[in-house]
Image (cartoon, rainbow, N blue to C red):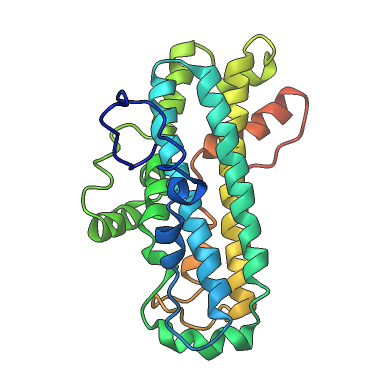
Length: 267
């Protein structure tokens, strides 16, 4: 855990002594807090930086847990995978709340320091794109999405030969049951049911995060103003609302309704 050197008389792996270790050294607070460097004289840039730093830290942990969950699913360790997937849904629920905090930055305040940002854009977040890739969006996002990821971050897609989406359906296929059967006989398949619900919740939280991101942008700069990344909100951001990791789980709701006599409109 600590980067502190071991003393000569202390066995490897032993906890550091009190004089070597503290809250500040454990969290590397000197490094973490010194990373926030405003580039403008405007005081409201601070909340802008704080919000985005916090999101990037959460994305780092989402990636960390996704890298644990996929091998768990591949090994059919469903109880462990379900616990971590549930956590990721909660993290994304928390991340979604960051937008309401950022909305306390008024539109005129933002526009007063926005020209300093030049080409800086959230679209350049490698970590967020990596989360999408690990979850399996490259399998569903279309050729343009895949091409843009390959151009911006060569090798990122290839780094994840098995995505969360693939690992999820590998579990379902090995179970010998269909998603509809898992839901219909959910208490006979509690871990599979929990897995599907946790995957659905993660997808739902990402949808909420994207939607509220759009609302935040609309509140700050509108949808017809070109963003610092060179795109218009109504074009790029709105298109991302179609991104789902598990569209099958959303469509499944129609099958469940039909199973119980619901009337389903044709697509």
